[in-house]
Length: 97
View 1 (cartoon, rainbow, N blue to C red):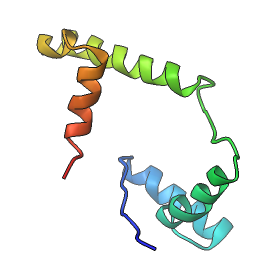
View 2 (view 1 turned 135 degrees about the vertical axis):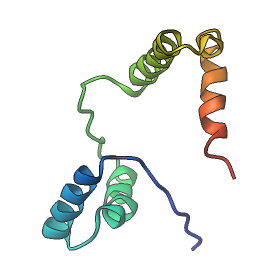
View 3 (view 1 turned 90 degrees about the vertical axis):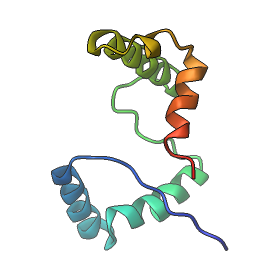
């Protein structure tokens, strides 16, 4: 079976904490936990935690609104004029090959 590598950004101390936690609880690194145990739980239909209590659609909308607000405050008005789909394309383009 083919596999892919994935990545995320977090503070160094948070990653160290999560690595220690998953090694203690499951005997694997946090990356291995995400790529195996978490993926399998999602496949079985277990709902992933939502720390802020909002659903995915409202989180995406909040993220787009925050980007637009920051672009106005930090001096990049071009982003503030972009549509939601244009912003999503811009973000996605940063992670493509």
